Every structure is written in C-alpha cells, then in structure tokens.
Amino acid sequence: MSSDVTSASPGPLSFEVARRDDPTPPEQIASVLADPGFGSTFTDHMVVATWTPENGWHDARVRPYGPFSLDPAAAVLHYAQEIFEGMKAYRHADGSIWTFRPEVNAARFARSARRLALPEMSEGDFIESLRQLVSVDQQWVPAGDEGEKSLYLRPFMFASEAFLGVRPARRITYSVIASPAGAYFTGGLKPVNLWISTDYARAGEGGTGAAKCGGNYASSLAGQLEGIEHGCDQAVFLDSSTHTYIEELGGMNLFFVTKDGKIVTPELTGTILEGVTRRSILELAKELDLEPEERRIPIDEWKSGAASGEIVEIFACGTAAVVTPVGELRWEGGSVDHRGEGHADRYAEAIRSRLLDIQYGRTDDAHGWMTRLV
Ligand SMILES: *Cc1c(COP(=O)(O)O)cnc(C)c1O
Image 1 (cartoon, rainbow, N blue to C red):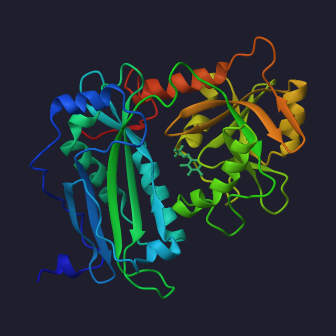
Image 2 (image 1 turned 120 degrees about the vertical axis):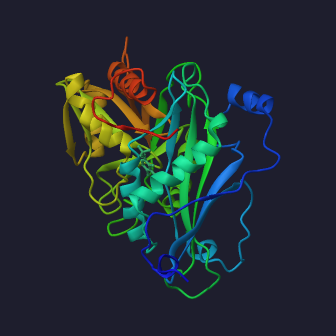
C-alpha cells in the first residue's frame, strides 16, 4: 500500500466523480431555477469524504445526491458533534461561476472543527470540494442578473462513528450539498421585527457560540419561537452572564449606524459567530464614509438610541439574506422603533448593493474577495 493512503496527513484530496445516470432534465432544472425559494430543492450530486485517525481524510467523491446510511448509534445523533458552513456560488454575466471569500469560510470551518473536537480540513481541500461539486452541477447555478439568484453551498461535517461512549468520534463524514436560492426577500427589503429573549441565551462564555455548529441553532429555536409568539420575526440574544449586552440573532450578526457616522457591531467576545458578511462590512465601511467600531453594546443603548434618534439604522447580515433592515425591537412590557417619518435604510441599501455588485462581478473586485470555481 502506498504511503499516501495510510498517512494521516496526505497531500491534497483527489475526488472521484460518479455522475447520476438519470440527471434532472434541463426543462425541470429551468423550472426550479425560475422560482428556487430557499433550501428545499437540491442539485443532482453531493460531495462526500471520510476521516479516520489512521487514514486522515480519504475516499473523497462526488456522487449522486441521496440519503446517508447512518447507524442509529452514530455519535452525531446523540452528542451533536457537527459543524457546517454556508456560502454561495454566483454566476457572472459571462457565464463563469464564482464564490465569495472561501478562504475565510475555510478558516472558520477549521476553527469550528477544533472547538467541536473534529478533524480540520485544509483550505485547499475545502475549496476543491466546492469546485468539484459546482463543476459537476454547474447547470444548477442560476443566472444572477434578475432577482439575485445563486447556488447556496452547504459544507458540513459530522461524527458518523457508531459508538455511544463520550469521546471525539473516530469516524467523521464530510459532505457538501447545494441548493438553488432565490432572493431572500421578494418585493424589496422588508424590515424584520426582533424580540429580546429574556428566558433564553444562544451561547455562554467558554461554550460554542463562536463555532458554526448545529447545536447553537438547536438552542436558538426556543428563543425564536418566543419571539414569534410575540409577533416578531426573530430573537436578538444578549450575553448570558449579565443579560446586558447585545450579541446577535440566531444566524445573523447585527450592525447599528449612528447619527455621527459610525457603524457599530458587537465585538467578538467568544460567544458571537464571526460572520464573513460582518467582516466584509467592517472592511467596506470606510468606502461609505462610515467609521467602523467593534465594542460591547448595551441593550439600553439600542432602546434609548432608537428613541432619541442617535441610532439611524439597524440591520442584520449574513450570507443567505446579505443585509436585512431591522424594524421594531420588542421586549416584555415595551417596544421601540427607530424608523421615524421618512426613514430610509440608506446604508443598508448601499452596503447591500456594494456586496451584491462585487459578488455578481458587476464592479471591480478591488479587495480580491472573489474566487472562480468554474
Ligand atoms: C452563519 C452565521 C452568521 C453569519 O455568517 P456569514 O458568514 O456572514 O454568513 C451569523 N451568526 C451566526 C450564529 C451564524 O451561524
């Protein structure tokens, strides 16, 4: 047996490609791409790779999309040893297909892996896995010009070893699936109303808040339900120890634009997920004549700043929705809305267009943020 098969740290993964022999007919793909929605239709193929302590990452393939065969004792089903990423593939006007800052997602995936005691995957293998899938399923990448359509990419990794003992699993599955995505919002930007969850926190100090793992999402759902019961769209989570400082939403980071031209976001204290969109907005701020600031933001500053007019815009951001204006903030016994007469989400709109123009290749990629996949 050659040494590159047995080594725990072999060279770059090579992907075997096994195509579906009954691919989705082009007319059917076209009808999906006409109105893709979000996260409900998947492409014809998926990536799968396996990790064991003996062989490292191996057996990487692009294969027909379909269910995993999973032992009922698979550790992920019991102890939630799982992480994921969320990215998009964008088709440019010349037909080429690109993705946005994949090296930042790769680095975050590696950080999440360390926190969840999962094996890291190299940046090279991670990006190659996306390239392999998008190349095989390239007909599923919508034209981006109308409606901000894209192919959403979901890389993920989970403990597939069948063992009920509590320790890091010794068999891990990596996979990438892809799903055509339409504009998150149809008919313009619609502000979301947020609920301050007092009963629930999303993450605690020393916990997994800075990792992108399924468990964080599971623990955010009760707060989200509480928000929905109070007529809101989502919950905003505060720090779990003092219940004073703003952290983020279940799956999006928050930004505040102040009257004096600052764009402020909660600083990374270990309980907040560092979004690629968040980082990009901080880096774009100067171009929009805004002074970026990362610091702790007390929830009372939101309440008073929204009422006094000190805060002029609030928005949430993430890969899926890009930028979403925030409307009313509600809590047990009160509410505040910073949008007075004639309010315009000027900066939210400007940042959103700037990001989309870069992602769809409609403007110069001055930051070098785009990577070509196909
Ligand atoms: C993924 C995620 C975000 C947004 O990150 P992006 O890289 O911008 O998509 C924000 N908060 C949480 C909790 C997330 O899981």
